[in-house]
Length: 290
Ligand SMILES: Nc1ncnc2c1ncn2[C@@H]1O[C@H](COP(=O)(O)OP(=O)(O)OP(=O)(O)O)[C@@H](O)[C@H]1O
Image (cartoon, rainbow, N blue to C red; front, side):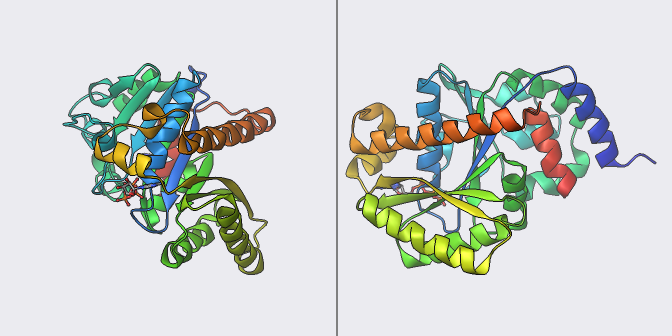
């Protein structure tokens, strides 16, 4: 009997052979909750879209501050409804502005709990509507849960967000350690920092401990820092994006630098491994691991 994974593989094969998607999947994660993961995801997506890229934000973090709240949009259905066949993928996609879409997700736990019932065939066909997306930013849940790891494993780049507080750093390290089993290059983003020096000092500490204890050829990269800034918390409160509200502020310039670093890194990687893949095969990678 054909297994679900085999069937999925065949389907994805037939879909991807017809398409030329080069979407880059960037997972934004953290060890601890409340460190700014969703703020970073939404503003990173905004800056990328301002730079002319087509960007989709996939909300896989169903917590208190969801991306729909941050982006001030109302959502009724999410990816789980699509996978179950209740509605189409186009029905749930929320256009935020030119070049920026929101895909309301679900936690990995929920998605995989119902994986037996999914209507893959239709879903994979539907993912073609996202084939022209250049970047998909995935806001994962916090922590080291097994299902979060599936998103991190399937992503092209993983960004671990942390703040200077020791508990957050310890949890970020735990996330890095577990992610190093599947990713050999991990970005660290220091949020709510006082200055560049503080960010570099904290990163150096994390890097030193990782070098001594993880090995695996792991390379950590400080992708950038963001200041602790009232402007950022004010924007979150009023459900706007600080990169729109104050595009020339220090915080926005930091965010632009982070985006430039990421794009530079990905462009170099594309030259080495130019694989054809879209949202359908991204989901395939997640579900097949389960
Ligand atoms: N650089 C910053 N300066 C000031 N406040 C910030 C900054 N980054 C995030 N915040 C504030 O921290 C709070 C948590 O941010 P956010 O919701 O983005 O974190 P999260 O890691 O996604 O949380 P959760 O784990 O609940 O999903 C928000 O109220 C936000 O305004």
